Image 1: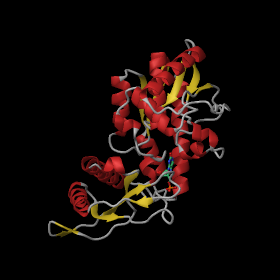
Image 2: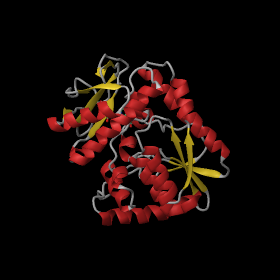
Image 3: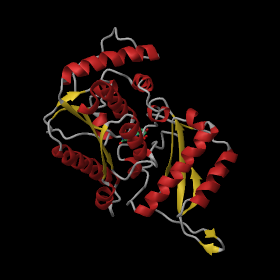
Image 4: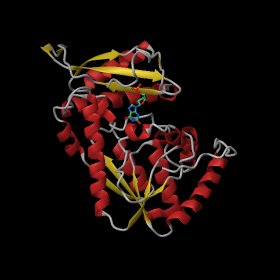
Length: 326
Ligand code: XMP
């Protein structure tokens, strides 16, 4: 991590013009820093690493090697979007690792939240290490460090993001957005031509759906969670709520209740809707979702998602409830 502090004179990047200027400066700086050497980047699909990837592709093309590790806990379609945007559209040097079986195998039977997080974080580092060991001639490691990561000296990013990388790796760092705030990273991302949905992606915990599939993760319940979550996102997109609500998702607890379907007993899990607004995630309020939309979402989830027999709405602000249901 760089010790550089943001100069007081540095203008807030709020317009496409300022973004273009920043991009041009960073392209020159990165080229100067890395020369003809190769750079490795862990590409999670989150805003910061995606913007760094797009910037570096512009600066050094195939000298950048992106590794996307799918831990099997991504939201529906997210790994596919990484492959589509970076692998196909931007023609990046992209290594895609589907490590779903490894992660889910290790998580089997583990219900304690902190243990789950640790397993996911450690395994992520192991997979990334294995992939980087296969590559030759890498001299630099790129990271999507942003300014708040540097300011928060407790290393929030390190514990928050699964992408906390091995400390013993002997690479020099390339951190082109380290002086930017999140809103600036987004403006730069749009100027780089990344899809709007990627640039304005909701915050997503590094351990992904692992923190929303409560208790010990099973494949069938994880599948139900991912499908129900996809329906919620689709309906929020269609109704315009997606633009208004800061974060929304489904959590599925490890409990079943009895229901009835086609005249037969039907045991299933509840899908819990959480939709919150906040400025800084320290406190949060509840978004009011129109009842007709809630009925529609409930109908879709209960009829389309195997294993879900109830839909609940979480009305709890933060405090007292945290945003996640971990
Ligand atoms: P809580 O649940 O503590 O969450 O109210 C506050 C915000 O942090 C997000 N969150 C994470 N973000 N890596 C992240 O990048 C993580 O491991 C992580 N865990 C929670 C959460 O989604 C909410 O926006």
